[in-house]
Image (cartoon, rainbow, N blue to C red; front, side, top):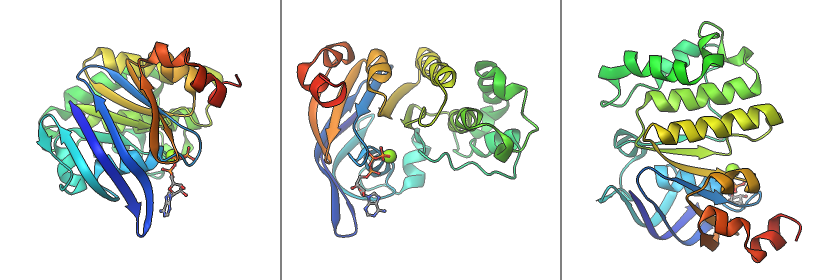
Length: 233
Ligand SMILES: Nc1ncnc2c1ncn2[C@@H]1O[C@H](COP(=O)(O)OP(=O)(O)OP(=O)(O)O)[C@@H](O)[C@H]1O
Ligand SMILES: [Mg+2]
C-alpha cells in the first residue's frame, strides 16, 4: 500500500533522512521505533509532503513524492501530528468536523462522526467541551478522532502515547488495534518499543535518520541488537 525507497529528507541544507526504505501492506500496523531525534517526525512529514524530500514514495501504486500535502491527504494518507494541532477554543465536535475536509470524507461526515464517537466514549461525553480544556489523553483521542473524520486509508500516528498516564497509554494502544480491525492501515512511530512492537505486523528501527533494523514485530522484540540498544540488554 505504501512503498518507500531511497528516501532522503531535508530541513534546508540539513539532511535528516538517509536512504530510507519501508513498506506498509494493506490492513496491517507498521511501526517505526527510534529514540529522540532519530527522525520519526521527519519521516511522517516527508511522507505527507510537508518537508523537502527526494526519493520514491508510492501510495497504492501512485507516485506521491511530488504531490503537495493537500493532494496527499486527498488520497487518504493522513497524519496525526506529534503536537496534536487541535484548535483549543473550538469544541471537540467542531475540531472533529474540521477533519472531514477531504472530498471523499465530506458526504459521509455524519456517519463517520457516529462511528468515531462510538469508538471513543470518552469523547462522546465531551463533544461540547472546548478542546483546550481536555486532559492530555483526551486531546490525543480528539486528534485521532479528527484524523479518522478524514476517512484515512493509511493513518500515520506520531507518538500518540507521549506523556500519557499508563491507563491512557493502554487505551490508545487498544484504540489503534480497533482502528486497524475496522480496515484502516496504520503507520505508527513510537518510542514505546515494547508496546508498539507487540502490536506491529512489520517494524523498523530508525537511528540517526537511517533504518538500521527491520522485521516482524515479535521477531524484533527478541532481537539481541534491539534489546541492547533500547531495552537495557
Ligand atoms: N525544523 C527543523 N529544522 C532543522 N532541523 C530539524 C527541524 N526539525 C527537526 N530537525 C532535526 O531533525 C532531526 C530529526 O528530528 P525529528 O523531529 O524527526 O526526530 P524524532 O525522532 O521525531 O524525535 P522525537 O522523538 O524527539 O520526536 C533532529 O536532529 C532534529 O534536530
Ligand atoms: Mg518526533
